[in-house]
Image (tube, rainbow, N blue to C red; front, side, top):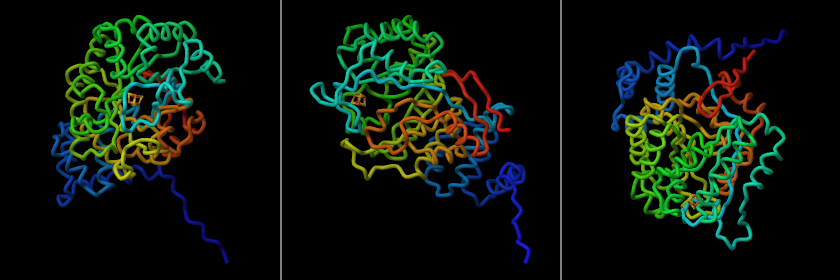
Length: 395
Ligand code: SF4
């Protein structure tokens, strides 16, 4: 008896047929998201209430179509299938920190046997131990609030990194760290930004934002700067020609409305100063910290965070899913929920791993390419400001 082999149709061959089906599905009057779909198609700005409506919907397919439509319509046609990544190295000069964020599993007290402090020379040696350091394009530098690592230390570190690795972009220090350095020296944050820019700082990472809601900050990170101050520092950086990213750390006990208000605060700041390149929704982990694990984000909530961020942030060009935080497989799915960036190779991530993320501490270029290609997209290696380094032709 002859074996019947089912005819195999590649997903990419099906795509043109699926597009009209998606459109019909979203345009049905009975679909509660059809009015939002219409607004997305017309390029109209979505409201807070519409963000909440999307969040409350259980129609995951419709949410994905909405976010992907927004991504496609806001992206030049020739780059619509691009997924960006960067060859980067994380540097955390110390894990000693004066603050007491309840979600932090990275921080250690100065007397802890697990505390470490790196000198400028230690950092250089550490980077050079990585065999592919010559092809790195970004340093991502964040650390604990530690008084011996003051402004002079970071100015020296950035100058030395600039001399040793002149082609590598320095993305360094959160707004919380900038504020800390200013207070240590009794100077304005503007002066800290100027000094570090002169020393080699190119951009700022988006950390320290957590969730902007005062109610949540009082509960989980009482000694961190306020939301207003975080936004003000990023605004100052933008005005000085230092672009930045923005994050949201969900899973701290915040409501969906508080997440939406956080995203809208970023949109408002972006309208004023325009320097955010990427928004990165993150999720908390619960090992070795004081946050109740019952607040943990589900996979569906993570996907909704990506989708709602893409829908509401019509003025931020990129939405990133940090594979370290949500795992490789869910980040692959997130590419159908408005995401167009997977961060990067990330040599030796320490912060999320201290809190129990189970993903690897580093991903090879080959793994990253496969992950993107097998979701039907084109991997594009970028630098920190989204200049294209290499397009990996899927053929
Ligand atoms: S999150 Fe940052 S500021 Fe807060 S305790 Fe940890 S290292 Fe310190």
